[in-house]
Length: 104
Image 1 (cartoon, rainbow, N blue to C red):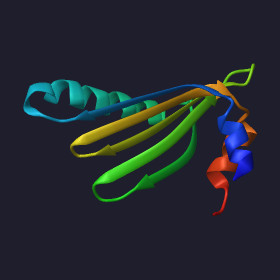
Image 2: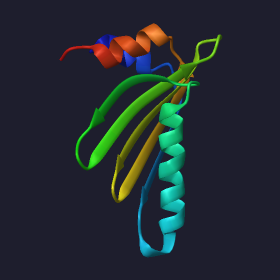
Image 3: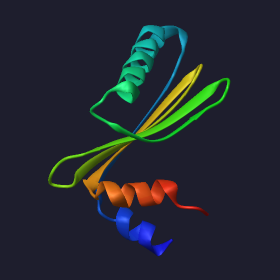
Image 4: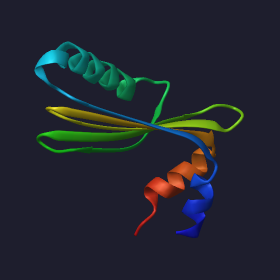
């Protein structure tokens, strides 16, 4: 959708973290999982979308400051892998909701 491209062109930063549980990082992995779970339940972020299956969950959360500087976190978590995508830019809450709620 051309409107989506225009909205995403307002993003200034994108960061991606993928951590997989292994023997040498089990404590770090579990710490990240707990922190992300707390973040998805925090009142400081709005939940845009959530999906859950038996083994995987995905959350899209956002917060927008008064100057329309927006943080969007996409958090995908299964038993062995945690992926976090952080987007930052100047888009309104309404623009974000339009993208998330858009029918294909």
